[in-house]
Image 1 (cartoon, rainbow, N blue to C red):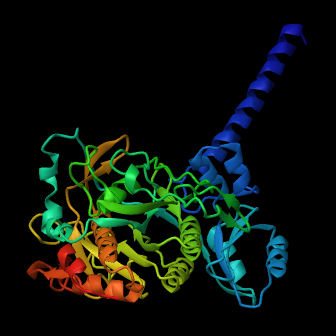
Image 2: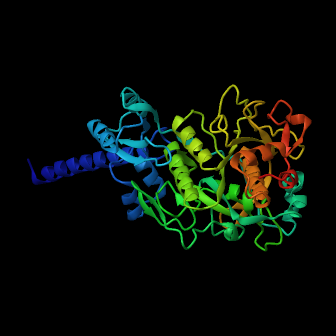
Length: 460
């Protein structure tokens, strides 16, 4: 064989090897894209390692998302849990302090999540096991426009829920903390920066026995397991602006509260995807901060899940025990939630309020989900002006916006009734509605939230 032929064959072999390596890397990357699969497999490394290495949040989220959430029965020790997971060649990622026995587990063998969950359910030590469901936030309408001098005239929703009259009594309080469980918040936004929660100087940083110590200056990022919940998607920033945003000149409010403390609880990545495990971890953080002395009274949940997660339900119950109200969007599919439940809107827990969306005509928005039993009240949710990424403002539509209005009104009411319990606050909001003919049979109260009624009824 000639020397030239030998060189040709060696080069051909090299090309084939490189092509195989490249193909394997592409396949690995495809697994890491959250939009591509329902349950994203994880790699056997700790979340803190990824955070320390400064990896991209989407890659980190994909690489570390556990396959299953497993609730072990009372009396099962941590050592036993480790032994069980090791026997299955799995990795215990975290134990959720707020719900004893609840754990998130990575399957090192990259197995099917449903099959892995079934494997754990068969064990006598396990109460239940379920896949780590993917959550996609609803981003219906975003109409970005430059801020005009007359932009405040577009805030039809503020007068519709009697906010100007309510502001004669209170404009809110920075002592009331509202968590926004979403894609984070652009906490540097000129219309939000003065209303962002900051950890008090005397409070220790958040510590989790499995995930380590997190310097939570302005909240928590469950995607990367760090203290930087900066929004890279925009959805959380839009919700935060309705709770407590203002125009950059501070000449007028584009949100319900002129004074409030917004705590970003980030579990959704830049692409708009999150998971039940990360949502639970963020709620777990919020409960701990509440117990540590933070006056966190309300969590806004402007997203929906089609599957019923027992783990998420138990964690919300733990928040109820801690005195935290959950205001959640009913869904934006234009459907009756009695026929196709959406969660957490359909959980029957004493701290959950489910919210539908209305439009300028005071009728149910076409996209809004509804239910005479499980959806409780309505709020404006169509063409709502709010804060957007990059110090901008946008018009948004969705039940996500409606839930944010009710979260804002809850905080406004608490500024007047600071000692109200979570049960009293929920009852107050359900009573503080304007009954509308178009909402009869669509929401259980038959009404749209009224901020003046909420601040005018003494409670506590």
